Image (cartoon, rainbow, N blue to C red; front, side):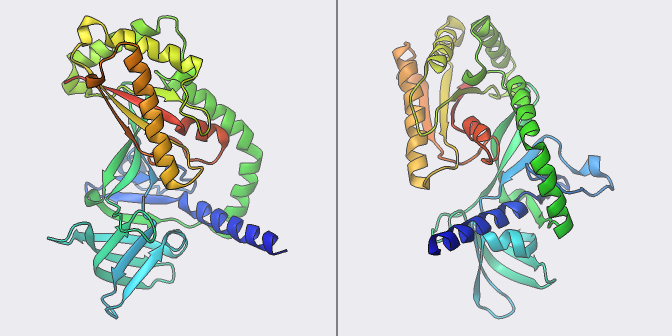
Length: 342
C-alpha cells in the first residue's frame, strides 16, 4: 500500500509539473517573444506574426530554484521548480544588479495576484546547489541546414517570462486529443526529422554523402562571414552506450575522408556529447563525455590528428526534443560535430 501511495505521489508530482511547463513565453528586450517548444495554448492574436520569433523555441529555463529577499518583509524566500510552473504567472526582470554576478531586481507575480519585489533575486540550475543559472536553453532554426540547433540565451536579454496556465477544460480536452493523436504525431515527427537532419548517422546514406558534405563545407568555408559554423554532423547512440555502431562508423569514415582532403587541412572539429534525461545528472555528464571521447578516438584512428579535435560533454543539457517518448530520447542521445573554419 505504501509503495502504491509513493508511486502515485511521484506520478502526480511529475505529471503536474509537465502539464504546466509546456506553456511559457519569454519576452525579450528587443520586443520579440519566444514560445516554449511544446506550447499548446492560443497565442495573442494582436500582431502575433510580428511579435513571436518563428526561428527560436525555448526548451528549458534551466531554473530549479529561485532565491530572493522580499522587499516587503526583508526575509529570504525560495521558489522551487514545481511552484514556479504552478503558482507563478510572471517573472519581470527590472535590471541586473550592478556589481553582483547573476543577481536581478525582479518582480514576481503569483496566480493569486500577489506581487513580490526583490532587489537581489538569484536563479539556481539545481536545487540545493550553488550552481547559478545564467542562460535559457533554446533551439534556433538554421535555414542553411534546414534543422534546429541547440543554443543558449542569456538572462540579460530577457524582459519578462510569462507562465500560461491551462483551464481544467483545456486540460481535459488536451488529454483526450493527445491520446487520439499521440502515435500519429510521433510518426509524423519521425518523418519530419529525417528530412531535416541533413547530416546524421541515424539517417546516413553512403551514396554521394562525402561529395555532398565536401561541397557544403567548401560553401561554408568560403562564406564563413555569412554562414558561420552552422553545419552540424550528428552521431546517434544506443541507450546507456558510448559504442560506435556500424552505421556511425561508416558515417565517421566519410567525415574523416573529407576532413583529410587538402581543402580542409586547417579545419578543426568541436565534439559535443549529450544524453537523454534518464538517470542521474553526474552519470549523464560522464556518459556524454565518454560518447564525445569515443567519437574522437574513432576519428583519430581514421587519421584525423588529435590536435584538430576538441571534445566536451554536456550531459542531458540542450535536448533537441523534449524527453517525452523513446523516439525523442533516441534523438537526444548524440554527439554533435561542428567543423571550425579558423
